Image (cartoon, rainbow, N blue to C red; front, side, top):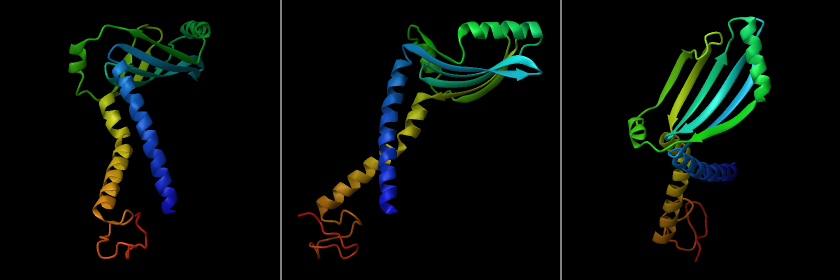
Length: 190
Protein backbone atom coordinates (compact mmCIF):
# COMPACT_ATOMS: atom_id res chain seq x y z
CA UNK A 1 0.00 0.00 0.00
CA UNK A 2 2.88 2.34 0.81
CA UNK A 3 4.43 1.70 -2.58
CA UNK A 4 1.13 2.44 -4.32
CA UNK A 5 0.79 5.74 -2.46
CA UNK A 6 4.34 6.66 -3.42
CA UNK A 7 3.69 5.97 -7.10
CA UNK A 8 0.38 7.85 -7.02
CA UNK A 9 2.12 10.84 -5.44
CA UNK A 10 4.86 10.74 -8.08
CA UNK A 11 2.26 10.69 -10.84
CA UNK A 12 0.41 13.56 -9.18
CA UNK A 13 3.66 15.53 -8.87
CA UNK A 14 4.41 14.93 -12.56
CA UNK A 15 0.94 16.11 -13.58
CA UNK A 16 1.46 19.10 -11.29
CA UNK A 17 4.66 20.05 -13.11
CA UNK A 18 2.99 19.75 -16.53
CA UNK A 19 -0.02 21.80 -15.39
CA UNK A 20 2.25 24.43 -13.83
CA UNK A 21 4.12 24.86 -17.12
CA UNK A 22 0.82 25.07 -19.03
CA UNK A 23 -0.65 27.65 -16.65
CA UNK A 24 2.56 29.70 -16.80
CA UNK A 25 2.39 29.70 -20.60
CA UNK A 26 -1.30 30.62 -20.53
CA UNK A 27 -0.56 33.41 -18.06
CA UNK A 28 2.18 34.84 -20.30
CA UNK A 29 -0.03 34.51 -23.40
CA UNK A 30 -2.94 36.23 -21.68
CA UNK A 31 -0.94 39.47 -21.51
CA UNK A 32 -0.96 39.79 -25.32
CA UNK A 33 -4.21 38.18 -26.42
CA UNK A 34 -7.38 36.70 -25.00
CA UNK A 35 -8.52 33.14 -25.56
CA UNK A 36 -12.02 31.79 -25.14
CA UNK A 37 -13.76 28.44 -25.24
CA UNK A 38 -17.54 28.33 -25.21
CA UNK A 39 -19.92 25.39 -24.99
CA UNK A 40 -23.59 26.02 -25.81
CA UNK A 41 -26.50 23.66 -25.68
CA UNK A 42 -30.19 24.14 -26.19
CA UNK A 43 -32.63 23.69 -23.35
CA UNK A 44 -36.23 24.46 -22.61
CA UNK A 45 -37.69 27.11 -20.33
CA UNK A 46 -41.47 27.55 -20.02
CA UNK A 47 -41.95 25.32 -23.11
CA UNK A 48 -39.79 27.72 -25.16
CA UNK A 49 -36.39 27.31 -26.73
CA UNK A 50 -33.63 28.60 -24.42
CA UNK A 51 -29.87 28.16 -24.26
CA UNK A 52 -27.26 27.52 -21.58
CA UNK A 53 -23.65 28.58 -22.20
CA UNK A 54 -20.44 27.74 -20.37
CA UNK A 55 -17.51 30.00 -21.21
CA UNK A 56 -13.86 30.03 -20.14
CA UNK A 57 -11.82 33.15 -20.88
CA UNK A 58 -8.14 33.80 -20.34
CA UNK A 59 -7.17 37.46 -20.39
CA UNK A 60 -4.91 39.88 -18.51
CA UNK A 61 -3.64 37.17 -16.17
CA UNK A 62 -7.07 35.88 -15.16
CA UNK A 63 -9.23 32.88 -15.97
CA UNK A 64 -12.91 33.71 -16.04
CA UNK A 65 -15.47 30.86 -16.03
CA UNK A 66 -19.05 31.89 -16.74
CA UNK A 67 -22.38 30.06 -16.90
CA UNK A 68 -25.06 31.98 -18.80
CA UNK A 69 -28.73 31.37 -19.51
CA UNK A 70 -30.51 33.00 -22.44
CA UNK A 71 -34.25 32.84 -21.80
CA UNK A 72 -36.46 34.46 -24.46
CA UNK A 73 -39.53 36.34 -23.24
CA UNK A 74 -41.83 35.26 -26.10
CA UNK A 75 -42.12 32.66 -28.88
CA UNK A 76 -40.84 35.01 -31.61
CA UNK A 77 -37.65 35.72 -29.66
CA UNK A 78 -37.24 31.98 -29.04
CA UNK A 79 -37.47 31.32 -32.78
CA UNK A 80 -34.87 34.02 -33.54
CA UNK A 81 -32.53 32.51 -30.94
CA UNK A 82 -33.03 29.01 -32.35
CA UNK A 83 -32.35 30.22 -35.93
CA UNK A 84 -29.22 32.08 -34.82
CA UNK A 85 -27.96 28.99 -32.98
CA UNK A 86 -28.55 26.73 -35.99
CA UNK A 87 -26.57 29.10 -38.20
CA UNK A 88 -23.65 29.35 -35.78
CA UNK A 89 -23.26 25.59 -35.38
CA UNK A 90 -23.60 24.58 -31.75
CA UNK A 91 -22.15 23.37 -29.38
CA UNK A 92 -18.44 24.40 -29.33
CA UNK A 93 -16.95 27.78 -30.16
CA UNK A 94 -13.28 28.72 -29.95
CA UNK A 95 -12.15 32.26 -30.24
CA UNK A 96 -10.35 35.19 -28.84
CA UNK A 97 -8.71 38.34 -30.07
CA UNK A 98 -5.40 40.13 -30.11
CA UNK A 99 -5.23 43.36 -28.20
CA UNK A 100 -2.38 45.62 -27.22
CA UNK A 101 -1.09 44.91 -23.71
CA UNK A 102 -2.34 47.36 -21.12
CA UNK A 103 -0.08 47.55 -18.09
CA UNK A 104 -2.63 49.71 -16.24
CA UNK A 105 -5.38 47.09 -16.63
CA UNK A 106 -3.01 44.35 -15.49
CA UNK A 107 -1.92 46.23 -12.36
CA UNK A 108 -5.49 47.27 -11.50
CA UNK A 109 -6.60 43.64 -11.52
CA UNK A 110 -3.65 42.11 -9.61
CA UNK A 111 -5.52 41.54 -6.34
CA UNK A 112 -8.83 40.66 -7.94
CA UNK A 113 -10.53 37.36 -7.26
CA UNK A 114 -14.21 36.99 -7.16
CA UNK A 115 -17.59 35.55 -7.84
CA UNK A 116 -20.04 37.58 -9.86
CA UNK A 117 -23.71 37.18 -10.56
CA UNK A 118 -26.05 39.34 -12.52
CA UNK A 119 -28.40 40.01 -15.38
CA UNK A 120 -27.11 41.51 -18.58
CA UNK A 121 -29.59 42.47 -21.26
CA UNK A 122 -27.92 43.32 -24.51
CA UNK A 123 -31.16 42.41 -26.24
CA UNK A 124 -34.39 43.20 -24.40
CA UNK A 125 -36.41 40.25 -25.69
CA UNK A 126 -33.70 37.66 -24.81
CA UNK A 127 -32.49 38.38 -21.24
CA UNK A 128 -29.04 37.07 -20.42
CA UNK A 129 -28.53 35.76 -16.84
CA UNK A 130 -24.99 34.88 -15.83
CA UNK A 131 -22.86 33.67 -12.94
CA UNK A 132 -19.11 34.02 -13.15
CA UNK A 133 -15.96 33.05 -11.25
CA UNK A 134 -12.73 34.92 -11.88
CA UNK A 135 -9.44 33.43 -10.68
CA UNK A 136 -6.00 35.03 -11.08
CA UNK A 137 -3.50 32.82 -12.90
CA UNK A 138 -0.91 33.30 -10.14
CA UNK A 139 -3.28 31.82 -7.54
CA UNK A 140 -4.09 28.86 -9.77
CA UNK A 141 -0.37 28.33 -10.37
CA UNK A 142 0.38 28.26 -6.63
CA UNK A 143 -2.38 25.75 -5.90
CA UNK A 144 -1.50 23.45 -8.81
CA UNK A 145 2.23 23.43 -8.04
CA UNK A 146 1.89 22.30 -4.39
CA UNK A 147 2.46 18.54 -5.11
CA UNK A 148 5.56 19.38 -7.19
CA UNK A 149 6.92 21.58 -4.39
CA UNK A 150 6.39 18.79 -1.84
CA UNK A 151 8.19 16.32 -4.15
CA UNK A 152 11.18 18.67 -4.46
CA UNK A 153 11.38 19.10 -0.66
CA UNK A 154 11.26 15.31 -0.16
CA UNK A 155 13.97 14.78 -2.79
CA UNK A 156 16.26 17.37 -1.18
CA UNK A 157 15.77 15.88 2.29
CA UNK A 158 16.45 12.35 1.02
CA UNK A 159 19.61 13.44 -0.79
CA UNK A 160 20.88 15.23 2.33
CA UNK A 161 20.33 12.11 4.42
CA UNK A 162 22.51 9.92 2.20
CA UNK A 163 25.28 12.50 2.01
CA UNK A 164 25.46 13.00 5.79
CA UNK A 165 25.45 9.29 6.68
CA UNK A 166 21.79 8.83 7.48
CA UNK A 167 19.43 6.11 6.25
CA UNK A 168 17.76 7.22 3.03
CA UNK A 169 14.50 5.51 3.97
CA UNK A 170 13.93 6.42 7.62
CA UNK A 171 16.63 9.02 8.46
CA UNK A 172 18.33 6.95 11.20
CA UNK A 173 21.97 7.87 12.03
CA UNK A 174 24.24 5.17 10.52
CA UNK A 175 27.60 6.19 12.06
CA UNK A 176 27.53 3.31 14.56
CA UNK A 177 26.20 0.69 12.07
CA UNK A 178 27.25 1.72 8.53
CA UNK A 179 26.45 -1.72 6.98
CA UNK A 180 22.72 -1.89 7.74
CA UNK A 181 20.10 0.39 9.28
CA UNK A 182 19.02 -1.05 12.67
CA UNK A 183 15.74 0.89 12.49
CA UNK A 184 14.29 -0.32 9.15
CA UNK A 185 16.82 -2.88 7.86
CA UNK A 186 17.81 -0.98 4.70
CA UNK A 187 21.31 -1.60 3.36
CA UNK A 188 22.85 1.76 2.41
CA UNK A 189 24.61 2.15 -0.94
CA UNK A 190 28.40 2.01 -0.80
